[in-house]
Image 1: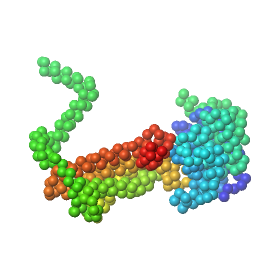
Image 2: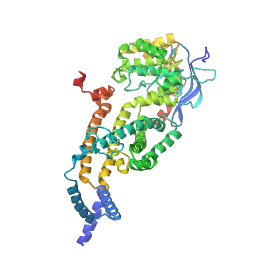
Image 3: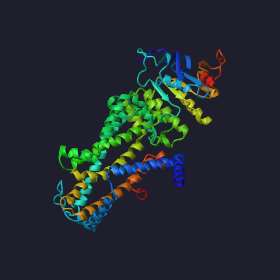
Image 4: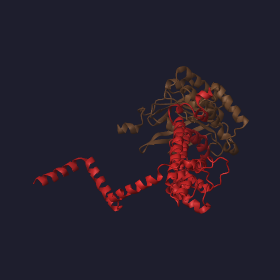
Length: 246
Length: 305
């Protein structure tokens, strides 16, 4: 069980990733609370995705701690964390419905998964999520045939069915036109507001990310700092290792 | 003096041109191998005489293999029609049936093994040990597997099915784990972030993602099994090869064997063409956007309306 009142994601003095022998980001201090959208911005290649993948548990920290969806055992429950990667992670050649119902796997029983027999709750949740993202007429269509914006909606619908406590979204607004980006932002807001999800959004566009996030952090040099705050050493926005090698 | 100059020029040419040097090494190597194997031109000339005698006995092919009833067929044929009970039809049908069973059983067994052997789905110790198992199954060709199973379960199609299944698992397993290792890592990361166990990551993310390649490989394996199904019959494991062997030994009726080979050739060509069309649906152009349907392959668009 999730302990109420605790942040859904907490980095404490965490050092993350490495370029050669040097950590990519040091002393990360950040929290993401329930119902909150936190933005993470910074230049390309500076380590935004690495930080997100660390939060997802795909990469270990070099030092310090990362607590996700703090449970009594300090380990995330199954299905507690949802991920929308930069290229969305949809299963190609499969239908919209198939991709969306995958979100229900985390909560399915062994028998249901072994025999691929989703129950009524899962099917209803899938139908509702597809309807919420406006793709009801595309349920049986292969995701390969959808536009970039529609594919992003499928990924969000999958997250809605999973209903994680923490959603990690990597560049989920990238290369979208303004209107489609606005629709995706509205969907993210509804996830935070209606489902109480904690959402960490990575976006390379600092102007856009400030328009819809409750708090925004930026990566500069090797540090993660709140947006608008200048780093103590006023360092470059590029990792120091790259400066050295240059 | 002139000879020395020629040698010097030859050496200069060889050392300056790496392609020529490699070509020279290959030619020397081939000569050494041919010499080691005791192959002589005289044996080829002698063989030509035998080929002439074989041709005289085999031609024209005796197509009575399509009309005569094979009373000695195993298992016994119970149809009224002589055509349906002819050696060519029974043999070819058995070969295709063995290939179908071996391909389906092989696919069912190889898919979980392939998922275990894929390094992106399994821990290194499991992937490496499963690869060793698959490699061991591939070491023996289907003919040797057939010999083993003829000893174990006796003469007949069962030995053929078991032999082809074993080889299919080894061969298809390798193709499949390579296809699974080639899938995009992002869907797998989504699954891992959700906290799904490895088998669910493979079952619901990796295998569906690679489904087009996997189906294409299965069809390729079916073609392969039809072709090799004729060979395993020679050692008693059923199929058209068994009927060829019946005519070869002890009767040496080469004209009937040639007729069976011609029937086999046309069937294999027909299966290759059908398989090619089906596989094209899985791997080419349109497959990027549309999952192929069997209906599209088996029924023409005119009929579908």
